[in-house]
Image (cartoon, rainbow, N blue to C red; front, side, top):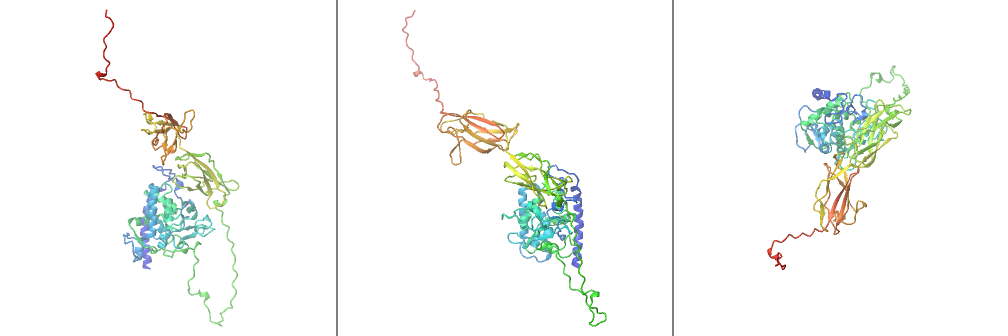
Length: 594
């Protein structure tokens, strides 16, 4: 009892402190109609969870979580080996493999999305709240949990209503979704957020390396800077949209930032309090921490005294009545569930998106818009639409993701984030589908075209000459521009042609060399640099004298001809002699004088 009371006091004290900090921070993060900050980060209201944000838009489906708070004393570093000697040391430590997964995820995110500033302590805080650090570090050598960690089914009975989206592949439930794994992703979110964190070629929500990396990318998906308190709050709320959840995660984040230590796998303590448990200190529900994918386990009555009305009487007593058959139970028909907006969607319609074309590296001018409609053609709001980039392309949505989920507005329209073209040219597809309902997807065709230039100019002024069989002393360098501006990463083709009248590849005269030293008279795959400049490789000449043309072309129509001359050097002209002995002598005149 004393221990229970102490835990309550500790929990109340930390909650009061954390709540005060979090409420102050949130007052700045919930401003309405914010569109972007000074750095152009997306901060629209679509990216900020609100009270009516669908649960399916969070990582966990707003599933239950552990509410235990960290100890009041600051953690102190401890040896990284050995068995904890007390529950307190175990509580403050993080299992070795789980801690390694968090730190590797932080390292990868610093490389992939450095502006996010994701701390591994945030992943540890979420991992603590979601699964008690993978149930105290019960993972194998590869980081996969020993037994699946599956939350209650999200059937609307005390939880959000999210119908099955994965045919039970991850959660074993083909009727409703359940949060899965050490970071408690719902299957529909894992479908686009999943990552391979341990390099085994699989994206497994039950693997702590995969789940930690996925959580990192999820928290960084809107170009949020997690060193900024407002962005940090938004990211945490997007994971599970609850003020209490935010306060709990922030308390563990602060705790781990003060210091923690590594403990052996499987020796961590399992939290006790849960957000869906009205009885503080009750044991965690098996549906949250065990492998059973169903809802709460049925309670087992304890052996106690029978009620007074059922107290047995002595045999033969006048008060004894013959037993009677129990009345048959009356069957109460199950109420017909109220259809959700998702249930009413019959098909998707293009909401006016045409002409999806962009130059490599540019952002598409138009965004994809999809309208959800009933069979009668009426708009359906509050439906989650998933947009997925398909095909052989490096194009992504803003933020670097290939999948985005957007909720339809009152007009039934969902607008996908802006598409950003990569360097790979060609056509690809963006498919819109309804999350939680099987209806035909809607495909949008998009095309990435080559970078172009309209002008090529030579940066050199010298005449390019060479003797037969020699090499040109100067290399060709050109600059590409488009409407007067630098044209970077523009492909340039260089061909030694026969003549202006016959612009086909020459079979003699100057040439480039390939990696094997063989003559090459057409170069492709060369691009201008960030300044629009391109320097070609060294040119050589065969034994054929003459004047030749090197023609350079780019997508967009820019053309430049450069003249090359191959000739023997001219014979030097002898200088006049100054030796008097070689000068012609004067001859006496034989003409008679007058």
